[in-house]
Length: 261
Image 1: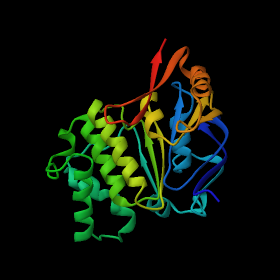
Image 2: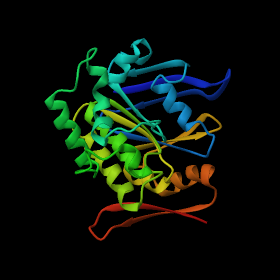
Image 3: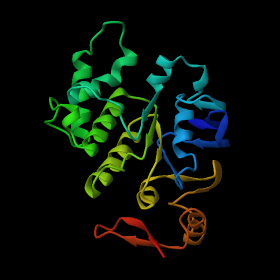
């Protein structure tokens, strides 16, 4: 049995389905990416999986049916990072990360010393060491995204859902964020699903890529296994004519490079 499975997921807004009958699985330790044009249903799919949107179909995580869990229980197992955090009050970066422990705390209970240490370590992990007392609202948009990522990593969820986490990050932090996520996935029974604005990042960091078009799952790419011709043909259904190349970095690491024609 797969660590995570989505079966027949349909969801939308105002009675109109944006995504229709989507099914896929994710193995433990794996990162699955979702690619598609604007409006294809990527964000809608993430919101359905984490329970923000009502939906038909079923999601199962490590034997637990997510639809059967209370919101508090669901938050313990599933972490969701939207494109915008929604935080608009003066609060320190450390306190934002500590919010990730709320589903594990009782009424009026405060984070303990172990949680404080885990939150500080998570900030360091994403490159925000020394900014624990910085006002969250004074951070750049990219730093805010990293802070929210630290919150989710510290909380210890089994399923992490990220909606274009690299969109506000510069070149260096885009790669660092994906490398951090890969390291987090290797530490236990957990998996991740991410929508990415940059297909080259997706090709080089994801184990599997789901292709969405018009709210329908149209194909699946495995960058480490599939031949270039197959991947090129499938990616062209989204991005039009392109070139796809295999190359190596100066350190010898295999890389995929996608160029628009």
